[in-house]
Amino acid sequence: MKIYGALTDQAGRCRHYHSQLDIVALKCAACQKYYACYRCHDEVADHHFVASSSSEPYPVLCGNCSCLLSKIQYLLGHCPYCQAAFNPNCRFHHQIYFKA
Image 1 (cartoon, helix red, strand yellow):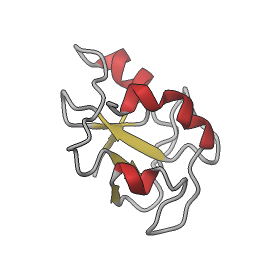
Image 2 (cartoon, rainbow, N blue to C red):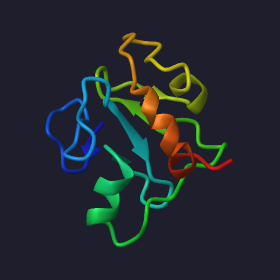
Image 3 (cartoon, rainbow, N blue to C red):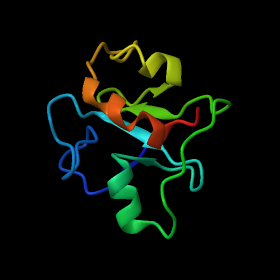
């Protein structure tokens, strides 16, 4: 599965967020593409990033193992398949990526 954005590596790190833990891609509900971050999306798309609804089965992609994750799996803070940890500071962007 392809991760879009201004990537610095294949795990989904981008020029905006590039720590060891920045390895998730999030799905824009409008274009149905996984982006490294909303800023990467908004720089290239003809629309703003649209948050995934609660009915979206896989709004997250693990950049470490490429597995698709549900919101509940993502909120565990690590990938349930490869155990890679996710950046806990992403919680500050929760409202951008997920509808209430």
